[in-house]
Length: 606
Ligand code: ADP
Ligand code: MG
Image (cartoon, rainbow, N blue to C red; front, top):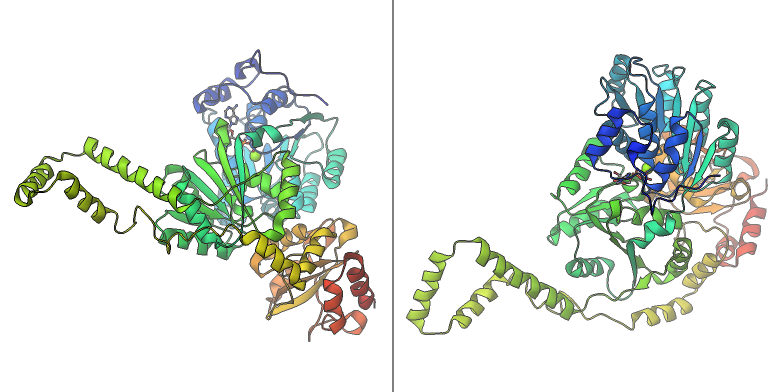
């Protein structure tokens, strides 16, 4: 295990490393002054051809950490894949390919090809045939190409696994292993991961040869540049709270995280209606459109992106000054990734988290994971909003006085003053009134109601009285919890999948795999209940056959889902019928931890 060199006193420079001159030139043009700690640590071993295991959080500069040395080692006279970079999502594949293209701009004849699902296969094929040096892609699409024999990896000299833990989380680990099996034994491997869960550890032990291990403790550093606050959801509707906050925060670009694809669209529309330039980002939007949206945020055409975790992950737009967690993330890792979208490239950032009363536990878990307190915030008062609007109004006057030729209007007003014999202040006041009529400087009680400060306590009281809420709180306290929600919704159907707690599965793995692999919007994924060696999941009725077939072969935590209907006409014959409808089940479900699982588990034994 080696630590990064101390760069505080005597900064290392990129020129101190044996990078290809063309690469060095590009780095200089991109404007990097000194290597980041992980770059300083990875450049020598990767340039020397060593395998490497890098543990570092997002935002530490991992792309250049592997790209600069591996690009320097390419043999450009060989127009065949020499370097393969695997990333968990298409967004990351594109981003990494773009960054590498920038670092490689002075390498003559350099070709890089991003391959990912959703993009035309024919374009990729044509490019592959023409000859590329580097392929960047998601494991799924790379596997597709391998199966069709349109991509061969026997010419590969190096392979990078970027965000390996995320690939695991998304159910790609088997694809990754199969891809690794297609590579020549002497290839160099660099594996990057923020965490080191057992399956990743296993992959490193199996495939990496005597790797150099680098660990960068950038977690706290990344987070300290970000001011973290939370608002306890109470009384005020979340949308009203959001617009109030937007009104007083000094922001540049914002990313707002929500849980579902529909919410991205709905919230973006509502913000648009309230005068903000916002756009949604979700997996249903075409790749081309998504890229355009990110470009529009970058260039300031829009200020707000409303996105889900999967698509917004890895977004690197320096002008993002605020991350707003409109819906709380499912786990602490996701939170860290989300807020890492701000405070990029040495800037500071703001993170705001909306926390419903029953989500307080997650808030504490996040504080623990980041090692930093998240401070409570009050919604801006009507006075604060008035103050802000007045400030903006005054600025508008100043800007207009400075930037406009006002001679004509001055004469007009002087004429009016002479005709009516009143003061200039009175005339100006009348004009000011007209200007602000659409959006009053002093918002009405309707527009900005009083903040109901006592609401949280009341809601807690209600929760204590409402047995359903109480059950949820008990569930919070217990083991891995399925997704929220009471009785199964109409139109949903229960399925059994052959992966459970004993395989290390958590709801997020299952949701991730099903959302990604079957293209089922996560909002359609209902409650997941984990048992020891299987789980039960609610999905919409009428699942198309091909989706169902596909889901059978999806792997989660090293197990095939082998999904089967758990109930209803298509249900398996025999003792498998679970009896979810039995009146006893619901009671058990609302009961305490262990009992409910045993009860349900027993009723399910064949
Ligand atoms: P990670 O993959 O660790 O999340 P990235 O490779 O995406 O990090 O880099 C994060 C940001 O830091 C990018 O905007 C990148 O351009 C910038 N960056 C990387 N290395 C340097 C450097 N040495 N100096 C300045 N900025 C850098
Ligand atoms: Mg990265």
